[in-house]
Image (cartoon, rainbow, N blue to C red; front, side):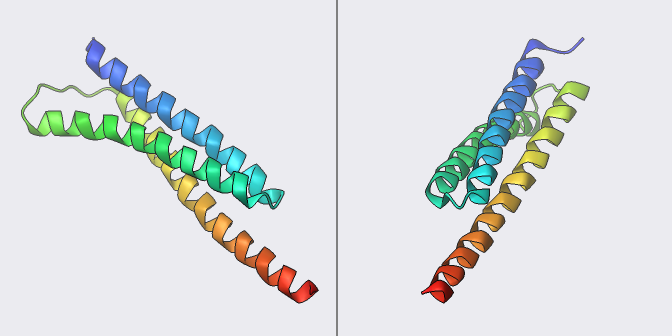
Length: 112
């Protein structure tokens, strides 16, 4: 049976990462509407949430390296997969932000 600490850590990672995914999706929606101020705000929110999730993972890894007893947990592995997938989504959204903002600026300059 999994320890309560492992379950709590896994669920914290999943919840923070899920919140990051929601903010990332909202950022992408804002980018699609050329609302770059809102997109930037949502990307910062997503980054903050994914950082919270990453801290929980880092704490668990550091505990294991200090010799704290650990066990394999499918739930924790799922949480780590979720964290890394959403981290990648945020990185792609940041690139989309840069690309689309530059594109819009160039288009606005041409329209003058």
